[in-house]
Length: 189
Image 1: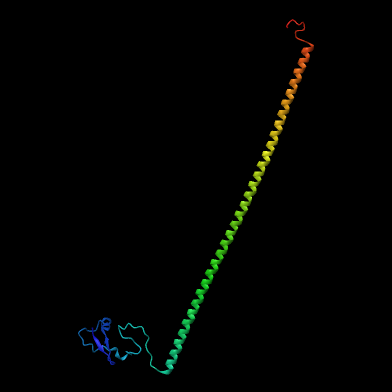
Image 2 (image 1 turned 90 degrees about the horizontal axis):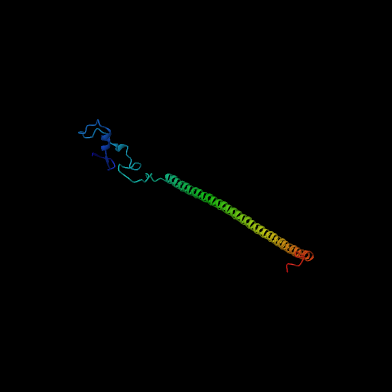
């Protein structure tokens, strides 16, 4: 690696020039290669291998310092505005998400209240159906009891009528036997 001394006392690596210029004789003394010292300004350029990221430092004149202050203040203002815009966007996003959550909660509450009303309605319909069914059973049992009582009364009346008819027949037969005896000659005594 060939180091070339620059007028400001810094050394400069020119080996990369050799790779870029293959027609240069490697045995030469490199005196024919024009050094970059004439175009190198340490105030505006970084040296090869310098990893610092600081911007070049301008000369200290008041006009430039004022411009720099304005640039810095404008960049601070832009950063501040950008931060404000970002905060506003984040706030808008939060507001939007809150609205979505509230709308979803309201929809769920509405759906839940609808389900509750539907359940109450179904419970009332079920209660009315059970009540109606119970009333029908009561009416049916009353009708069956009345039917049973009427059947019992008719059967008892039929039994009484038969018993009365039988007793009347027995009385009639006795009267007939008395009037017209079977053993009218009295020989069967």
